[in-house]
Image 1: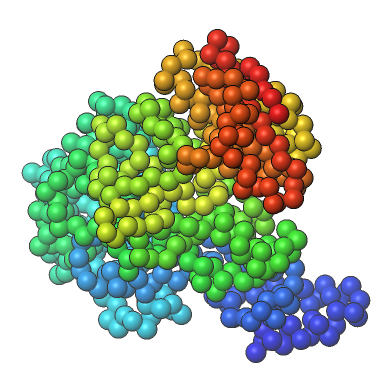
Image 2 (image 1 turned 60 degrees about the horizontal axis):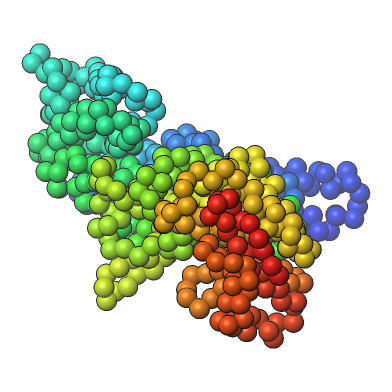
Length: 567
Protein backbone atom coordinates (compact mmCIF):
# COMPACT_ATOMS: atom_id res chain seq x y z
CA UNK A 1 0.00 0.00 0.00
CA UNK A 2 2.92 2.31 0.65
CA UNK A 3 3.94 2.10 -2.98
CA UNK A 4 0.50 3.23 -4.15
CA UNK A 5 0.31 6.05 -1.59
CA UNK A 6 3.54 7.78 -2.52
CA UNK A 7 2.67 7.66 -6.22
CA UNK A 8 -0.68 9.35 -5.58
CA UNK A 9 0.97 11.91 -3.35
CA UNK A 10 3.58 12.59 -5.97
CA UNK A 11 0.95 13.24 -8.62
CA UNK A 12 -1.02 15.54 -6.36
CA UNK A 13 1.97 17.61 -5.25
CA UNK A 14 3.86 17.76 -8.49
CA UNK A 15 2.71 21.31 -9.20
CA UNK A 16 3.28 22.66 -5.69
CA UNK A 17 6.89 23.76 -6.24
CA UNK A 18 10.37 22.34 -6.59
CA UNK A 19 10.96 22.01 -2.84
CA UNK A 20 8.01 19.65 -2.45
CA UNK A 21 9.03 17.67 -5.50
CA UNK A 22 12.52 17.22 -4.11
CA UNK A 23 11.11 15.96 -0.80
CA UNK A 24 8.90 13.41 -2.54
CA UNK A 25 11.84 12.30 -4.70
CA UNK A 26 13.95 11.37 -1.73
CA UNK A 27 11.02 9.65 -0.09
CA UNK A 28 10.51 7.51 -3.17
CA UNK A 29 14.19 6.61 -3.26
CA UNK A 30 14.10 5.59 0.42
CA UNK A 31 11.07 3.36 -0.01
CA UNK A 32 12.43 1.64 -3.11
CA UNK A 33 15.85 0.71 -1.75
CA UNK A 34 14.68 -1.60 0.97
CA UNK A 35 12.17 -4.03 -0.59
CA UNK A 36 13.91 -7.14 -1.98
CA UNK A 37 11.73 -7.22 -5.01
CA UNK A 38 9.73 -4.56 -6.78
CA UNK A 39 5.98 -4.71 -6.46
CA UNK A 40 4.48 -6.01 -9.66
CA UNK A 41 3.13 -3.03 -11.62
CA UNK A 42 0.72 -2.67 -14.48
CA UNK A 43 1.53 -0.60 -17.55
CA UNK A 44 -0.12 2.50 -16.12
CA UNK A 45 1.96 2.34 -12.99
CA UNK A 46 5.13 1.72 -14.94
CA UNK A 47 4.73 5.06 -16.64
CA UNK A 48 4.42 6.82 -13.28
CA UNK A 49 7.71 5.61 -11.81
CA UNK A 50 9.79 8.76 -11.58
CA UNK A 51 13.35 9.54 -12.41
CA UNK A 52 16.02 9.04 -9.77
CA UNK A 53 15.16 5.65 -8.31
CA UNK A 54 18.32 4.10 -6.99
CA UNK A 55 18.63 0.41 -6.14
CA UNK A 56 21.71 -1.70 -5.51
CA UNK A 57 22.84 -3.71 -8.52
CA UNK A 58 25.05 -6.76 -7.76
CA UNK A 59 27.76 -5.87 -10.29
CA UNK A 60 30.87 -7.85 -9.42
CA UNK A 61 29.15 -9.52 -6.44
CA UNK A 62 29.96 -13.23 -6.54
CA UNK A 63 29.13 -14.15 -2.94
CA UNK A 64 25.54 -15.01 -2.14
CA UNK A 65 25.89 -14.02 1.53
CA UNK A 66 27.24 -10.58 0.61
CA UNK A 67 24.49 -10.10 -1.95
CA UNK A 68 21.71 -10.91 0.49
CA UNK A 69 23.08 -9.09 3.49
CA UNK A 70 23.80 -6.04 1.34
CA UNK A 71 20.24 -5.84 -0.01
CA UNK A 72 21.32 -6.17 -3.62
CA UNK A 73 18.79 -7.01 -6.30
CA UNK A 74 18.60 -10.73 -6.92
CA UNK A 75 16.93 -12.74 -9.65
CA UNK A 76 15.62 -15.70 -7.68
CA UNK A 77 17.13 -18.98 -8.95
CA UNK A 78 16.77 -20.84 -5.67
CA UNK A 79 13.97 -23.13 -6.85
CA UNK A 80 16.40 -24.63 -9.38
CA UNK A 81 19.13 -24.75 -6.72
CA UNK A 82 16.86 -26.78 -4.44
CA UNK A 83 15.84 -29.11 -7.25
CA UNK A 84 19.47 -29.88 -8.10
CA UNK A 85 20.68 -30.13 -4.50
CA UNK A 86 17.88 -32.45 -3.44
CA UNK A 87 18.90 -35.20 -5.87
CA UNK A 88 22.35 -35.74 -4.30
CA UNK A 89 23.71 -36.40 -7.80
CA UNK A 90 27.19 -35.25 -8.86
CA UNK A 91 26.75 -32.57 -11.53
CA UNK A 92 28.67 -30.68 -14.15
CA UNK A 93 27.56 -27.36 -15.69
CA UNK A 94 29.27 -25.38 -18.44
CA UNK A 95 28.40 -21.76 -19.17
CA UNK A 96 30.25 -18.82 -20.77
CA UNK A 97 32.27 -16.40 -18.66
CA UNK A 98 30.43 -13.80 -16.56
CA UNK A 99 27.17 -15.71 -16.61
CA UNK A 100 26.86 -16.07 -12.83
CA UNK A 101 28.56 -19.43 -12.26
CA UNK A 102 30.49 -18.16 -9.23
CA UNK A 103 27.37 -16.69 -7.62
CA UNK A 104 25.52 -19.93 -8.31
CA UNK A 105 28.16 -21.99 -6.51
CA UNK A 106 28.15 -19.53 -3.63
CA UNK A 107 24.37 -20.02 -3.40
CA UNK A 108 24.86 -23.78 -3.16
CA UNK A 109 27.51 -23.21 -0.49
CA UNK A 110 25.18 -21.09 1.64
CA UNK A 111 22.40 -23.63 1.24
CA UNK A 112 24.51 -26.64 2.27
CA UNK A 113 25.92 -24.69 5.21
CA UNK A 114 22.35 -24.32 6.44
CA UNK A 115 22.24 -20.50 6.34
CA UNK A 116 18.47 -20.39 6.34
CA UNK A 117 18.27 -16.68 7.14
CA UNK A 118 19.86 -15.76 3.80
CA UNK A 119 17.02 -17.42 1.88
CA UNK A 120 14.10 -15.73 3.58
CA UNK A 121 11.59 -14.48 1.04
CA UNK A 122 13.01 -16.64 -1.77
CA UNK A 123 11.41 -19.65 -3.45
CA UNK A 124 13.60 -22.17 -1.63
CA UNK A 125 12.28 -21.01 1.76
CA UNK A 126 8.96 -22.72 1.02
CA UNK A 127 10.60 -25.83 -0.42
CA UNK A 128 13.28 -26.73 2.13
CA UNK A 129 12.06 -27.97 5.53
CA UNK A 130 15.14 -29.46 7.22
CA UNK A 131 18.09 -27.09 6.49
CA UNK A 132 20.84 -29.60 7.30
CA UNK A 133 24.48 -28.52 7.55
CA UNK A 134 27.25 -30.25 5.60
CA UNK A 135 31.00 -29.71 5.36
CA UNK A 136 31.58 -27.74 2.15
CA UNK A 137 34.80 -27.84 0.10
CA UNK A 138 34.62 -24.84 -2.25
CA UNK A 139 37.52 -24.69 -4.71
CA UNK A 140 37.88 -21.59 -6.89
CA UNK A 141 40.42 -21.88 -9.71
CA UNK A 142 39.67 -18.58 -11.46
CA UNK A 143 42.06 -16.14 -9.81
CA UNK A 144 45.50 -17.24 -10.96
CA UNK A 145 47.90 -16.45 -13.81
CA UNK A 146 48.82 -20.09 -14.45
CA UNK A 147 52.09 -19.21 -16.12
CA UNK A 148 54.23 -22.02 -14.69
CA UNK A 149 53.90 -25.69 -13.69
CA UNK A 150 54.13 -24.72 -10.04
CA UNK A 151 51.29 -22.19 -10.23
CA UNK A 152 48.60 -24.86 -10.36
CA UNK A 153 50.25 -26.96 -7.66
CA UNK A 154 50.46 -23.95 -5.35
CA UNK A 155 46.81 -22.96 -5.58
CA UNK A 156 45.65 -26.54 -5.02
CA UNK A 157 48.05 -26.93 -2.12
CA UNK A 158 46.89 -23.67 -0.49
CA UNK A 159 43.29 -24.77 -0.64
CA UNK A 160 44.12 -28.22 0.72
CA UNK A 161 46.02 -26.63 3.63
CA UNK A 162 42.89 -24.69 4.64
CA UNK A 163 40.82 -27.88 4.75
CA UNK A 164 43.58 -29.74 6.60
CA UNK A 165 43.75 -27.04 9.28
CA UNK A 166 40.09 -27.70 9.96
CA UNK A 167 39.91 -31.47 9.58
CA UNK A 168 43.52 -32.64 10.06
CA UNK A 169 46.16 -34.23 7.82
CA UNK A 170 47.47 -37.78 7.59
CA UNK A 171 51.22 -38.32 7.88
CA UNK A 172 51.35 -40.42 4.73
CA UNK A 173 49.42 -37.91 2.60
CA UNK A 174 51.98 -36.25 0.36
CA UNK A 175 50.46 -35.99 -3.12
CA UNK A 176 47.73 -33.50 -3.98
CA UNK A 177 45.26 -36.28 -4.70
CA UNK A 178 46.18 -38.12 -1.50
CA UNK A 179 45.70 -34.99 0.60
CA UNK A 180 42.38 -34.26 -1.12
CA UNK A 181 41.06 -37.77 -0.47
CA UNK A 182 42.21 -37.65 3.14
CA UNK A 183 40.55 -34.27 3.80
CA UNK A 184 37.25 -35.49 2.34
CA UNK A 185 37.29 -38.69 4.39
CA UNK A 186 38.06 -36.95 7.70
CA UNK A 187 35.49 -34.20 7.08
CA UNK A 188 32.84 -36.86 6.49
CA UNK A 189 33.82 -38.91 9.52
CA UNK A 190 33.98 -35.90 11.84
CA UNK A 191 30.67 -34.42 10.70
CA UNK A 192 28.80 -37.71 10.42
CA UNK A 193 27.55 -36.87 6.94
CA UNK A 194 28.73 -36.59 3.35
CA UNK A 195 30.92 -33.78 2.06
CA UNK A 196 29.82 -31.19 -0.50
CA UNK A 197 32.44 -30.38 -3.17
CA UNK A 198 32.01 -27.27 -5.32
CA UNK A 199 34.60 -26.45 -8.00
CA UNK A 200 34.43 -23.06 -9.70
CA UNK A 201 36.33 -22.81 -12.99
CA UNK A 202 37.54 -26.42 -13.06
CA UNK A 203 38.97 -25.84 -16.54
CA UNK A 204 40.44 -22.36 -16.02
CA UNK A 205 44.06 -23.60 -15.75
CA UNK A 206 43.73 -25.40 -19.09
CA UNK A 207 42.07 -22.49 -20.87
CA UNK A 208 44.91 -20.21 -19.75
CA UNK A 209 47.56 -22.39 -21.40
CA UNK A 210 45.82 -23.70 -24.52
CA UNK A 211 48.58 -22.30 -26.71
CA UNK A 212 51.35 -23.86 -24.55
CA UNK A 213 51.45 -27.60 -25.24
CA UNK A 214 53.97 -28.33 -22.46
CA UNK A 215 52.04 -26.57 -19.72
CA UNK A 216 48.75 -27.88 -21.06
CA UNK A 217 49.91 -31.47 -20.77
CA UNK A 218 51.36 -30.85 -17.29
CA UNK A 219 48.17 -29.21 -16.00
CA UNK A 220 46.01 -31.92 -17.52
CA UNK A 221 47.92 -34.64 -15.67
CA UNK A 222 47.78 -32.74 -12.38
CA UNK A 223 44.05 -32.05 -12.62
CA UNK A 224 43.30 -35.55 -13.83
CA UNK A 225 44.78 -37.05 -10.68
CA UNK A 226 43.13 -34.43 -8.47
CA UNK A 227 39.60 -34.71 -9.87
CA UNK A 228 39.75 -38.52 -9.92
CA UNK A 229 39.43 -38.36 -6.14
CA UNK A 230 35.80 -37.36 -6.63
CA UNK A 231 35.11 -40.84 -7.95
CA UNK A 232 37.21 -42.85 -5.53
CA UNK A 233 35.80 -40.95 -2.55
CA UNK A 234 32.18 -41.33 -3.55
CA UNK A 235 31.20 -43.00 -0.23
CA UNK A 236 32.20 -39.83 1.64
CA UNK A 237 30.46 -37.37 -0.68
CA UNK A 238 26.97 -35.93 -0.40
CA UNK A 239 26.95 -33.60 -3.40
CA UNK A 240 29.37 -32.52 -6.16
CA UNK A 241 29.09 -29.68 -8.69
CA UNK A 242 31.80 -28.63 -11.11
CA UNK A 243 31.42 -25.57 -13.33
CA UNK A 244 33.49 -24.21 -16.18
CA UNK A 245 33.42 -22.95 -19.74
CA UNK A 246 34.36 -26.14 -21.58
CA UNK A 247 32.52 -29.39 -21.24
CA UNK A 248 34.24 -31.75 -18.81
CA UNK A 249 34.98 -34.57 -21.19
CA UNK A 250 36.43 -32.24 -23.77
CA UNK A 251 39.66 -31.54 -21.96
CA UNK A 252 40.86 -35.13 -21.97
CA UNK A 253 40.75 -35.26 -18.17
CA UNK A 254 39.12 -37.88 -16.06
CA UNK A 255 37.57 -39.94 -18.76
CA UNK A 256 36.63 -42.43 -16.06
CA UNK A 257 34.78 -39.82 -14.02
CA UNK A 258 31.53 -40.82 -15.65
CA UNK A 259 29.30 -40.34 -12.63
CA UNK A 260 29.01 -36.60 -13.28
CA UNK A 261 25.61 -35.65 -14.66
CA UNK A 262 26.21 -33.02 -17.33
CA UNK A 263 23.26 -30.60 -17.20
CA UNK A 264 24.76 -28.04 -19.57
CA UNK A 265 22.10 -28.78 -22.21
CA UNK A 266 19.28 -30.02 -19.95
CA UNK A 267 16.03 -28.14 -20.56
CA UNK A 268 14.88 -27.89 -16.92
CA UNK A 269 18.14 -26.19 -15.92
CA UNK A 270 18.70 -24.14 -19.08
CA UNK A 271 17.88 -20.85 -17.33
CA UNK A 272 19.79 -21.40 -14.08
CA UNK A 273 22.39 -18.90 -15.29
CA UNK A 274 21.16 -15.84 -17.15
CA UNK A 275 17.96 -13.80 -16.97
CA UNK A 276 14.74 -14.69 -18.76
CA UNK A 277 12.55 -11.94 -20.23
CA UNK A 278 9.96 -12.52 -17.52
CA UNK A 279 12.62 -12.24 -14.81
CA UNK A 280 13.89 -9.05 -16.42
CA UNK A 281 10.45 -7.42 -16.28
CA UNK A 282 9.61 -8.74 -12.82
CA UNK A 283 12.86 -7.64 -11.18
CA UNK A 284 13.95 -4.49 -13.01
CA UNK A 285 10.83 -2.44 -13.74
CA UNK A 286 12.19 0.84 -12.28
CA UNK A 287 15.49 0.38 -14.07
CA UNK A 288 13.76 -0.35 -17.38
CA UNK A 289 11.68 2.80 -17.06
CA UNK A 290 14.70 4.90 -16.19
CA UNK A 291 16.60 3.40 -19.13
CA UNK A 292 13.69 4.23 -21.44
CA UNK A 293 13.51 7.81 -20.21
CA UNK A 294 17.27 8.38 -20.43
CA UNK A 295 17.43 7.13 -24.02
CA UNK A 296 14.15 8.75 -25.10
CA UNK A 297 12.48 5.42 -25.83
CA UNK A 298 9.15 3.91 -24.91
CA UNK A 299 9.01 1.02 -22.46
CA UNK A 300 8.38 -1.46 -25.27
CA UNK A 301 11.13 0.00 -27.46
CA UNK A 302 13.52 -0.37 -24.54
CA UNK A 303 12.59 -4.01 -24.05
CA UNK A 304 13.03 -4.66 -27.76
CA UNK A 305 16.46 -3.03 -27.80
CA UNK A 306 17.51 -4.95 -24.68
CA UNK A 307 16.34 -8.14 -26.39
CA UNK A 308 18.22 -7.41 -29.61
CA UNK A 309 21.45 -6.56 -27.80
CA UNK A 310 21.61 -8.95 -24.85
CA UNK A 311 19.02 -11.74 -25.17
CA UNK A 312 19.13 -14.83 -27.35
CA UNK A 313 21.32 -17.31 -25.46
CA UNK A 314 19.88 -20.82 -25.70
CA UNK A 315 21.57 -23.69 -23.87
CA UNK A 316 18.97 -26.21 -24.93
CA UNK A 317 16.91 -26.53 -28.09
CA UNK A 318 13.67 -26.77 -26.11
CA UNK A 319 14.23 -24.00 -23.55
CA UNK A 320 13.56 -20.27 -23.65
CA UNK A 321 16.41 -17.88 -24.21
CA UNK A 322 18.14 -15.83 -21.54
CA UNK A 323 19.74 -12.40 -21.32
CA UNK A 324 23.41 -12.00 -20.51
CA UNK A 325 23.29 -10.98 -16.82
CA UNK A 326 26.55 -9.03 -16.92
CA UNK A 327 25.39 -6.78 -19.74
CA UNK A 328 21.95 -6.29 -18.19
CA UNK A 329 23.36 -5.11 -14.86
CA UNK A 330 25.84 -2.78 -16.53
CA UNK A 331 23.18 -1.21 -18.73
CA UNK A 332 21.16 -0.39 -15.63
CA UNK A 333 24.23 0.96 -13.86
CA UNK A 334 24.88 3.76 -16.33
CA UNK A 335 21.66 3.65 -18.39
CA UNK A 336 23.71 3.44 -21.57
CA UNK A 337 23.57 0.72 -24.22
CA UNK A 338 27.00 -0.73 -24.96
CA UNK A 339 28.84 -4.01 -25.59
CA UNK A 340 29.62 -4.67 -21.93
CA UNK A 341 30.15 -8.44 -21.98
CA UNK A 342 32.14 -8.47 -25.19
CA UNK A 343 34.51 -5.75 -24.04
CA UNK A 344 35.51 -7.64 -20.89
CA UNK A 345 37.21 -10.46 -22.76
CA UNK A 346 38.27 -10.12 -26.36
CA UNK A 347 38.42 -13.41 -28.30
CA UNK A 348 42.04 -13.08 -29.43
CA UNK A 349 42.76 -16.78 -29.09
CA UNK A 350 39.58 -17.70 -30.93
CA UNK A 351 40.42 -15.40 -33.85
CA UNK A 352 43.91 -16.89 -34.07
CA UNK A 353 42.30 -20.32 -34.05
CA UNK A 354 39.98 -19.27 -36.87
CA UNK A 355 42.89 -18.06 -38.99
CA UNK A 356 44.96 -21.15 -38.23
CA UNK A 357 42.14 -23.49 -39.22
CA UNK A 358 41.40 -21.44 -42.37
CA UNK A 359 37.75 -21.46 -41.40
CA UNK A 360 35.41 -19.61 -43.74
CA UNK A 361 34.20 -16.71 -41.60
CA UNK A 362 31.20 -16.12 -43.83
CA UNK A 363 29.84 -19.49 -42.75
CA UNK A 364 30.42 -18.63 -39.10
CA UNK A 365 28.67 -15.26 -39.38
CA UNK A 366 25.62 -16.66 -41.17
CA UNK A 367 25.25 -19.65 -38.89
CA UNK A 368 26.77 -23.11 -38.58
CA UNK A 369 24.83 -26.36 -38.71
CA UNK A 370 26.30 -29.11 -36.55
CA UNK A 371 25.36 -32.15 -34.52
CA UNK A 372 25.75 -32.04 -30.75
CA UNK A 373 29.00 -33.98 -30.65
CA UNK A 374 30.71 -31.58 -33.06
CA UNK A 375 30.30 -28.55 -30.81
CA UNK A 376 30.14 -30.17 -27.38
CA UNK A 377 33.14 -32.47 -27.67
CA UNK A 378 36.07 -30.12 -27.86
CA UNK A 379 39.55 -31.50 -28.32
CA UNK A 380 42.53 -29.25 -27.72
CA UNK A 381 44.35 -30.46 -30.80
CA UNK A 382 41.32 -30.37 -33.11
CA UNK A 383 41.41 -28.19 -36.18
CA UNK A 384 37.86 -27.06 -35.55
CA UNK A 385 37.23 -23.72 -33.79
CA UNK A 386 33.44 -24.11 -33.47
CA UNK A 387 33.27 -26.02 -30.13
CA UNK A 388 35.36 -23.48 -28.26
CA UNK A 389 33.57 -20.55 -29.91
CA UNK A 390 30.23 -22.02 -28.84
CA UNK A 391 31.30 -22.81 -25.29
CA UNK A 392 32.85 -19.37 -24.88
CA UNK A 393 29.45 -17.80 -25.56
CA UNK A 394 30.06 -16.33 -29.01
CA UNK A 395 27.69 -18.83 -30.62
CA UNK A 396 24.50 -20.30 -29.24
CA UNK A 397 21.69 -22.65 -30.28
CA UNK A 398 19.24 -20.93 -32.65
CA UNK A 399 17.51 -23.90 -34.23
CA UNK A 400 17.18 -27.67 -34.15
CA UNK A 401 16.37 -30.22 -36.84
CA UNK A 402 14.64 -33.11 -35.04
CA UNK A 403 14.79 -35.37 -38.06
CA UNK A 404 18.56 -35.31 -38.41
CA UNK A 405 19.52 -34.21 -34.90
CA UNK A 406 21.38 -31.13 -36.15
CA UNK A 407 21.64 -27.79 -34.39
CA UNK A 408 21.90 -24.33 -35.92
CA UNK A 409 24.55 -22.26 -34.13
CA UNK A 410 24.57 -18.47 -34.56
CA UNK A 411 25.57 -15.35 -32.71
CA UNK A 412 23.19 -14.93 -29.76
CA UNK A 413 22.53 -11.21 -30.20
CA UNK A 414 23.74 -7.93 -31.69
CA UNK A 415 26.26 -7.29 -28.90
CA UNK A 416 28.15 -10.45 -29.79
CA UNK A 417 27.44 -10.34 -33.52
CA UNK A 418 28.80 -6.88 -34.19
CA UNK A 419 31.37 -6.99 -31.43
CA UNK A 420 32.88 -10.16 -32.87
CA UNK A 421 32.89 -8.92 -36.46
CA UNK A 422 34.33 -5.56 -35.46
CA UNK A 423 37.08 -7.35 -33.55
CA UNK A 424 37.95 -9.34 -36.67
CA UNK A 425 38.64 -6.31 -38.87
CA UNK A 426 42.30 -5.66 -37.85
CA UNK A 427 43.06 -9.37 -38.33
CA UNK A 428 41.92 -9.33 -41.96
CA UNK A 429 42.68 -5.75 -43.02
CA UNK A 430 45.22 -2.99 -42.46
CA UNK A 431 42.72 -0.90 -40.48
CA UNK A 432 43.81 -0.44 -36.88
CA UNK A 433 41.60 -0.57 -33.81
CA UNK A 434 40.92 3.13 -33.38
CA UNK A 435 39.98 3.58 -37.03
CA UNK A 436 37.20 1.00 -37.26
CA UNK A 437 34.36 3.17 -36.02
CA UNK A 438 35.53 6.08 -38.15
CA UNK A 439 35.53 4.04 -41.32
CA UNK A 440 32.20 2.41 -40.61
CA UNK A 441 30.41 5.69 -39.97
CA UNK A 442 31.85 7.18 -43.11
CA UNK A 443 30.76 4.15 -45.14
CA UNK A 444 27.15 4.57 -44.10
CA UNK A 445 27.04 8.36 -44.53
CA UNK A 446 28.63 8.22 -47.98
CA UNK A 447 26.04 5.80 -49.30
CA UNK A 448 23.23 7.71 -47.63
CA UNK A 449 24.37 10.82 -49.51
CA UNK A 450 24.79 8.96 -52.81
CA UNK A 451 28.58 9.28 -52.93
CA UNK A 452 29.56 5.92 -54.42
CA UNK A 453 33.04 7.09 -55.36
CA UNK A 454 33.89 8.11 -51.78
CA UNK A 455 32.54 4.81 -50.46
CA UNK A 456 34.64 2.65 -52.77
CA UNK A 457 37.72 4.82 -52.33
CA UNK A 458 37.44 4.28 -48.61
CA UNK A 459 36.88 0.55 -49.14
CA UNK A 460 40.22 0.45 -50.94
CA UNK A 461 41.91 1.32 -47.64
CA UNK A 462 40.66 -1.97 -46.22
CA UNK A 463 42.73 -3.82 -48.82
CA UNK A 464 45.91 -1.79 -48.47
CA UNK A 465 49.02 -3.90 -47.95
CA UNK A 466 47.14 -7.05 -48.80
CA UNK A 467 49.43 -9.68 -47.28
CA UNK A 468 49.10 -12.71 -49.56
CA UNK A 469 49.63 -13.75 -53.14
CA UNK A 470 46.43 -13.78 -55.14
CA UNK A 471 45.37 -17.40 -55.13
CA UNK A 472 42.42 -19.46 -53.98
CA UNK A 473 43.22 -18.78 -50.32
CA UNK A 474 43.51 -15.06 -50.98
CA UNK A 475 40.20 -15.03 -52.82
CA UNK A 476 38.49 -16.19 -49.66
CA UNK A 477 40.38 -13.56 -47.69
CA UNK A 478 39.19 -10.87 -50.08
CA UNK A 479 35.62 -12.15 -49.89
CA UNK A 480 35.73 -12.14 -46.08
CA UNK A 481 36.80 -8.48 -46.00
CA UNK A 482 33.94 -7.43 -48.28
CA UNK A 483 31.60 -9.58 -46.22
CA UNK A 484 32.70 -7.98 -42.92
CA UNK A 485 32.26 -4.44 -44.23
CA UNK A 486 28.69 -4.95 -45.38
CA UNK A 487 27.71 -7.01 -42.36
CA UNK A 488 29.00 -4.32 -40.01
CA UNK A 489 27.09 -1.68 -41.95
CA UNK A 490 23.95 -3.71 -41.29
CA UNK A 491 23.71 -2.44 -37.71
CA UNK A 492 23.16 1.12 -38.99
CA UNK A 493 21.39 0.68 -42.31
CA UNK A 494 19.78 -2.02 -44.40
CA UNK A 495 22.80 -3.95 -45.66
CA UNK A 496 23.00 -7.58 -46.65
CA UNK A 497 25.54 -9.82 -48.30
CA UNK A 498 24.83 -12.63 -50.71
CA UNK A 499 23.91 -15.85 -48.97
CA UNK A 500 22.49 -17.73 -51.95
CA UNK A 501 23.03 -18.04 -55.66
CA UNK A 502 21.00 -15.82 -57.92
CA UNK A 503 21.54 -12.73 -55.78
CA UNK A 504 23.87 -9.78 -56.00
CA UNK A 505 27.04 -9.84 -53.93
CA UNK A 506 25.72 -7.08 -51.66
CA UNK A 507 22.64 -4.87 -51.30
CA UNK A 508 22.53 -1.67 -49.23
CA UNK A 509 19.28 0.17 -48.50
CA UNK A 510 19.30 3.80 -47.38
CA UNK A 511 16.38 6.23 -47.07
CA UNK A 512 16.92 7.51 -50.63
CA UNK A 513 18.84 4.75 -52.44
CA UNK A 514 19.04 1.02 -52.94
CA UNK A 515 22.53 -0.08 -54.03
CA UNK A 516 23.16 -3.39 -55.73
CA UNK A 517 26.86 -4.36 -55.76
CA UNK A 518 28.59 -7.01 -57.83
CA UNK A 519 32.31 -7.64 -57.26
CA UNK A 520 34.58 -9.30 -59.83
CA UNK A 521 37.85 -10.85 -58.75
CA UNK A 522 38.54 -12.39 -62.14
CA UNK A 523 36.57 -10.06 -64.37
CA UNK A 524 35.86 -6.45 -65.21
CA UNK A 525 33.55 -3.80 -63.81
CA UNK A 526 31.65 -3.91 -67.13
CA UNK A 527 31.05 -7.63 -66.70
CA UNK A 528 29.81 -7.02 -63.18
CA UNK A 529 27.20 -4.51 -64.41
CA UNK A 530 26.21 -6.87 -67.21
CA UNK A 531 25.66 -9.67 -64.68
CA UNK A 532 23.40 -7.44 -62.58
CA UNK A 533 21.23 -6.84 -65.66
CA UNK A 534 21.27 -10.40 -67.00
CA UNK A 535 20.52 -12.01 -63.64
CA UNK A 536 17.78 -9.53 -62.81
CA UNK A 537 19.29 -8.49 -59.46
CA UNK A 538 17.35 -5.20 -59.56
CA UNK A 539 13.94 -6.76 -60.13
CA UNK A 540 13.03 -7.40 -56.45
CA UNK A 541 13.49 -3.70 -55.67
CA UNK A 542 11.80 -2.00 -58.67
CA UNK A 543 8.52 -1.38 -56.84
CA UNK A 544 10.23 0.04 -53.77
CA UNK A 545 10.18 3.68 -54.88
CA UNK A 546 13.77 4.49 -53.94
CA UNK A 547 16.42 5.25 -56.55
CA UNK A 548 18.17 2.07 -57.70
CA UNK A 549 21.93 2.19 -58.17
CA UNK A 550 23.85 -0.74 -59.67
CA UNK A 551 27.58 -0.83 -58.94
CA UNK A 552 30.13 -3.03 -60.67
CA UNK A 553 33.48 -3.37 -58.89
CA UNK A 554 36.69 -4.82 -60.34
CA UNK A 555 39.40 -6.29 -58.13
CA UNK A 556 42.95 -6.20 -59.55
CA UNK A 557 45.13 -9.29 -59.08
CA UNK A 558 48.22 -7.20 -59.76
CA UNK A 559 47.38 -4.43 -57.29
CA UNK A 560 45.71 -6.81 -54.86
CA UNK A 561 43.06 -4.17 -54.31
CA UNK A 562 39.93 -2.64 -55.80
CA UNK A 563 40.97 -1.13 -59.14
CA UNK A 564 37.92 0.14 -61.03
CA UNK A 565 34.23 0.56 -60.57
CA UNK A 566 31.26 1.64 -62.66
CA UNK A 567 27.75 2.70 -61.68
